[in-house]
Image (cartoon, rainbow, N blue to C red; front, top):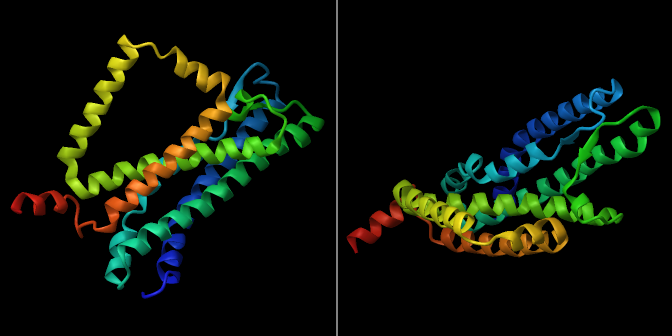
Length: 235
């Protein structure tokens, strides 16, 4: 596996089934919400359709990290694995955003003309912009950010093992709780709800930082989980 084509095709095939299942779940939710709109059972309710795509984006690194061993066993490199995973997720993220906004378009512009349509909440509504590119950008930014969070968490766990990862996660959780309880986070709420476009742009910047950090972690990653810490203990 001396070229990038092999690892890329392997990762695309590994992720395809997850994407199809996720798309099917989202479609079923869309049909269900549409049915509620037809029978006027959700006049004053708003429904969230993006949940499955967002959750799966966060779980992608954990579900498909097994491709790491497949690629290395076939003669591939760590760099090829990371780049293949990134490109595959990018393609499926763009496809997910397109599919998700297609459902929104059908609900708002086609079903609404026939009968009452269920109100599907879109995070871009916080931006209050009629530009459809904003809707695509908001969805993509959130999906790619969630993937980057899952990726940095997975790479730290894989490189340094469960104990150190849990200790770091606990520390971050405690710091977050202290900030929420004793700090003033009203500014954060204002940024999220009043300046959501700027907020998701910041998330995109953080995504790049997380993905570059993950790449550096995996550039010389061990063959098995936690071996980097074990090797350092003997040095």
